[in-house]
Image (cartoon, rainbow, N blue to C red):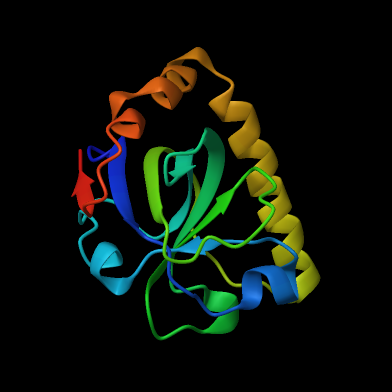
Amino acid sequence: MRSLPYFCRGEVVRGFGRGSRELGIRTANFPDSVVDNLPGDITTGIYYGWACVGHGDVHKMVMSIGWNPYYKNTKKSMETHIIHTFKEDFYGEILSIVIVGYIRAEKSFDSLDSLITAICNDISEAKEKLDLPEYQCMKDDNFFRSHENSIMNGH
């Protein structure tokens, strides 16, 4: 995908409420305005990269972009799982991400357990790939230090 790495920033909004409650995997969600501005060559699927909430530290992340076929969503979403334990929610904060790679296409699952297993595998793969030198350098990109609160999408 020519649009990678893809830099994106937006406010964290409430999603479907399934990440924590049903899956045990918390996600931060972007508003429709951010999702609607994704480049055409960023197809639906599972991605990995780096994320920063507000002016905090930069952490590894894995992200689902798409329709979540298991749940038969009618609205496309961008759900970011930051690989870090936060003490509290951060709705309304600015989330800055850089998407650096693609793991797999989105697909439906025959059970909630198989969905959770796939997500855990995606997280493990993202952790491993983000340890590679070509991705480690993105953690220190100036994008994360710019501390702009404006919405931003771009390459």
